[in-house]
Length: 287
Ligand code: BEZ
Ligand code: FE
Image (tube, rainbow, N blue to C red):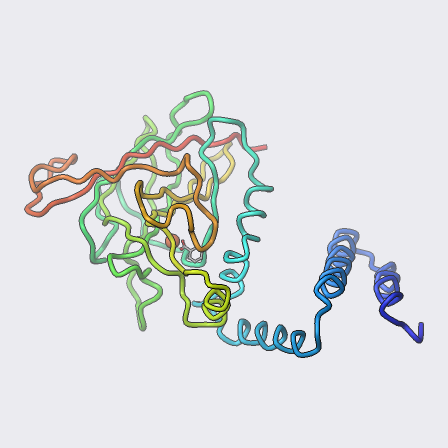
């Protein structure tokens, strides 16, 4: 194949893919090439713009390591993560909706008993969280593995602190025989996604802010049920309608109720004000 020009290059590349034996890979790369070429044609991409794009992706790669996943941030801020989540988690009405995973989950978080304080030293107003895990027919789900993770009052996850070696404001619990779960943590606050790298510069250049509304992350798994990765968002947060990563769903918004000092739901005498949050989860059947 020689003398390719702007009219023949796309078909030439697609023809070169014909011998790929992995059919799914072939389908994905074929579509990617078609869309990439269409994008360059539609925007009439200049060489300087192509170079800027390569520089940007190089910076995204350079800042990415095991603690900082700039490619996920890029996917999140372009809405790709929400699109992929939505397409892959179509559920019957009544199920708790899924939302983006985010980059701050870690494996091997400590296992707690119901009633424990998962904050484990993370700073913030105390918050007592409780609810029930059920299936679609209303059946309580006993022994569901509930992983929770959240930012502290400064808006940082434990993994964002230098030399951090303690799991704070994250943990694993199991629902009780009646499906209930309850734990103590801290009140979530709105926070900006990491924006000191190329994705932050991109948001700046586009006139976009990096803020997420206050939320708690949950991942719930139980035999016979589809894994649920979701958040619970705080009612009345100013960023609910402009989440930097497009993750908010109305069904996931709940009130964090404020209480003066006194007796907490678990009987603890609180000498400072505290909050409570109740949220029930409904799991889809495994397919
Ligand atoms: C998070 O909520 O932890 C998150 C999600 C997407 C991008 C950055 C952070
Ligand atoms: Fe988060």
